[in-house]
Picture 1 (cartoon, rainbow, N blue to C red):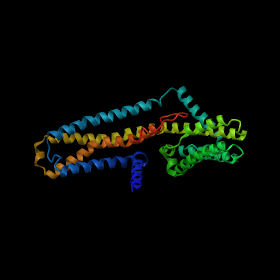
Picture 2 (cartoon, rainbow, N blue to C red):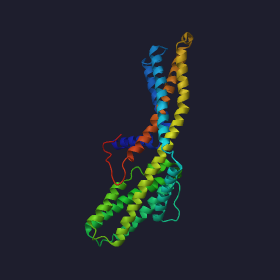
Picture 3 (cartoon, one colour):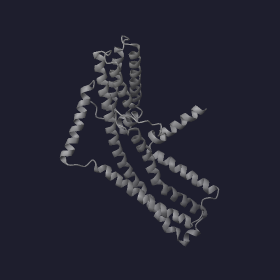
Picture 4 (cartoon, one colour):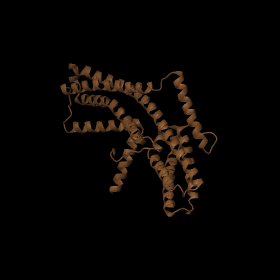
Length: 327
């Protein structure tokens, strides 16, 4: 029973942070807030008529949401400023990207590499799986038992990563959306595999055949290309996600601010006291949900952005433990 509960918890966390549509996650957050407000109303802890506390609360939301929207848009503009440059800078960036693509294409088992992020990473991992299989075929047991066992363990880790990533990438959604390519590689451990390659190559230098050394070098190059591609796609994803977040906050925040301002404008009118209590409570609940809407949108996007940044913070060949970052 405990294992089932843990599995459900992981599924909920995975949907909330990674897989779920950001608008759906924001909707769930707002739904939870609405249920909480209704519970407070049921136990008479929520005001059923206009008063100074609610007036001050709506005033705070009006100023807070305005600051929130302004700060997020400013951050978005800061990110966009990195994409600007002189013709020489832009040309150099393009040439660097083309040079990297040509380097990757030289080690691929095809003449032309794909342009979509998902397909690009899929081909790289398929090639890595082929190299791991070739290395496995060279492990005939002629080496020492220790070397043979360590080669088997390295090959197993490589093939397991390749299997998990290719399974996640071999879908239309992963190919169409750049986040699909990033999510598929969040659990890969190129730094550890690169370390094992170097360690085995150093400790058993005299026992490795020339073919195995060549395969080691090819696997190392593939791991490097995969890590660079993942980091680049992460950069593109964050830029696109922040721009989409800014636009969404404007679409949601401006009507929410208008509704909050309108609520404040009518709260001091004497005519509002003549309205039925149910209408006042309903309007207050709607206004409260509108106040929380920009924050819910921001939270849903930042949850995924921060998770991607956390899981991609280190640069190969270095690695960082995740045990201190369990949330």
